[in-house]
Image 1 (cartoon, rainbow, N blue to C red):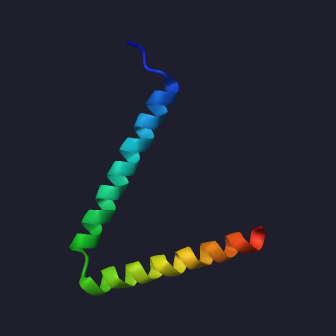
Image 2: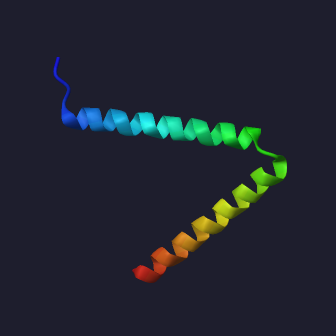
Length: 58
């Protein structure tokens, strides 16, 4: 059974996404509580910066 290139690309992408998610979750659980809080705050700030930048472009 030959594999379609798009199916293979999708499989690789999904596998990479699952692995990256697992690594991030493990890093959050192993990190110190203050590091986790700082990371969550930084992510919230990053999202707000991107949404402001996106609104400016339109």
